[in-house]
Amino acid sequence: MSLTVHQVSKKYEAHLAVDSVSFNIQPGEIVGFLGPNGAGKSTTLKMIAGFLPSDQGVITLNDCSIEKDPTAYKKSIGYLPESNPLYLDMYVKEYFHFLAEVHQLPNPNKRIQEVIGEVGLTIMQTKKMGELSKGYQQRVGIGAAILHQPALLLLDEPTSGLDPNQLIEIRQLIQSLSSKSMILFSTHILQEVTAICSRVLVLHQGQLVANEPIENLLKTSQNKVTVIFEQTIDAHLPELKALGFQIELVDKHTLVAEANDTTLLKNKLMSFALAKGLNIQSLQSQQASLEEIFKLLTH
Ligand SMILES: Nc1ncnc2c1ncn2[C@@H]1O[C@H](COP(=O)(O)OP(=O)(O)OP(=O)(O)O)[C@@H](O)[C@H]1O
Ligand SMILES: [Mg+2]
Image (tube, rainbow, N blue to C red):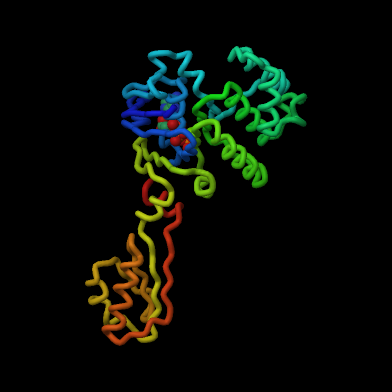
């Protein structure tokens, strides 16, 4: 089963929150959904989850859509909303039994114990949800989303507000769930995306500005090369700039150049040095970070 989002838009009164967004997700993928506050991530996830109607466009899971067959569509989706609403007076196990009934699961006890084990709630299952820490409440939310074994899992900021240990544990949990469901999750933690995602979608003011594997994003970005020469090079700056790269002097001996393809850049700089009789003391390249790319895409 695969997810197709085709030219989907959503307006809140006059405000266009999601603007003709299109993308696909294939089985086995963990896709990170990034974008500044207010970019439209939660709105998009709500539309895919079938909680909010779109104004325009089509969302399908294989051939199934919410319009064609709402029951079958919703069965295929597990959704953890941003606010993770839980009945705080309910016991964890009782909540899962309630959900199993809603989903009409054939063998509820077995499946509930499986999920409780999978999300690490075994020792908390007899507690009230209001007594749980934020991290354990997130586990309940994720457990609730996977109980009916959906093909697509939508997680809206599943790791927000967690301490570093819980963050790592929830991340590992998300990773382990990808063998059973395609996962689309929103986050503001860029290192998380690097750690577990095969691909990232970046939304900015309702528009999709990137849809790439992380390696591609890093490759297509501007990478820097810093070169320190033994001799002063300020007199050569016009000729250096004529090489066709963005080049700035840091001091009289040091330049910083930027390019997508740093191999070509390095070769040109070394040939230049050779032709002019300049000695290179050091040459270092630095790949753009995901933070820098994110800033560039969303400014
Ligand atoms: N129910 C609503 N009514 C009116 N405007 C809304 C509503 N929900 C969201 N918006 C607006 O739509 C835009 C997109 O909001 P959305 O919550 O989808 O962004 P987001 O990317 O999830 O942001 P965040 O990272 O802060 O969670 C924002 O400008 C927001 O103010
Ligand atoms: Mg949001």
